[in-house]
Image (cartoon, rainbow over all chains, first blue to last red):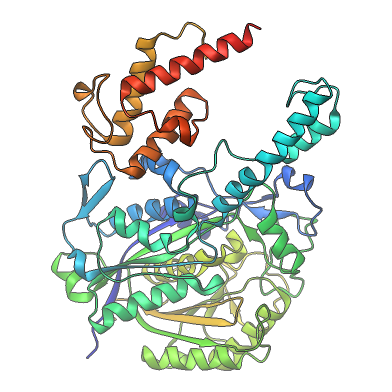
Length: 459
Length: 92
């Protein structure tokens, strides 16, 4: 009999909520957070897509990250620390500061040698790299311009006679310094290393750079580590932070024609599974962390169990680096494997948290696969219809939504769905539903597919 | 930064940074406190402290300048020199 794996805590930072509870209540209320992209980005380029979802203000004083740590880290790992703090509190896992100088905590109720950290991310701390590169590039350019100004008799950097210089200065946005922690902030594995250091966890520590499926893959690997007996407990989830001062990250997706193109009405532009969808809504980012525990580990300490993870599977399209294989046969193969792993049959699935980005090919393929595999019975929704696409965080946020939907016997609507691409049981109303067994699936650039199966604990 | 900043003010602000970065008791600190030998700062602590000092005094500290900043007193001397240089520059 394989060891059972339980979700006992959830922490979330998302565009529609700084905490799990705020996020969940906004999801159930159908609240999104769409806004225009930053005006400063237009100084560098025009864009086809003009909307995104912004992260909320994060009140760092609530979390175990000091001002000094905020200087040493990027936003991605800081958000992970905040989401981990939320998740541990939600799980009732008390932690205490053991090294004030390093800001290191100890979780008394877990064996640090048997507790792992498994985090997914698309691009880690690249935002900080871009800012440091700007400093690196613009500093000598400014110096040359200052020399030129001096030769012309102007005050360096303040040449009121030169509007061209003023324009250049406005374009050369850069931080005060080149951050000496640039390497450790940028490297993707910081995403699992930082929470591991923060809480002194010495079990398996892995970062999964699986693009839009990264969070799902990370949670699946944490599930496997506990199920196999390699670990008893894990912090697992995903993170992404996609702001840069120049809009370069946004531009890459915009040029790839992945983003929502019809931005005439910000409230309805983002419409996964709708016939009139025009691409995905870019998000500034987010983070979700789940506490997973082996069943007896959770029960022995009297933990509340939110839901149980019972199955996981992955597949790979081997088709195209940016386009999903349109028949969906590799997704189907993955789903067959995930159901067998659980083990449940397709008709046991009550709810599917779909990948559902809002792009033409993806939604068409995913909806067809759902209908072939599950028919019209299971509820289907798209968390991205509310918060946009948080890339490497999305799978973890959606796994959290899936667990909360099971726990609370309700889920959120598939927002802006007026003309469904297929006749599936899309969630059009947030009300009470009987959700015992559910599935969350993610598909990524590269061709990576991953799915988690969960069920109500005790059923 | 005000032109009337005193050395005593500068010392107090450096101590505040040292306490925040190294988490040491402020009562332990004196002008002769050596960051690495006495307060146990490692190389990353030093880098972090330089960042915090740059933020505190709103000026950049080059790698060359940083080499001499081994005690609170030496750091105060450097900051006072910088402030004086700024005053001289602005009075030209």
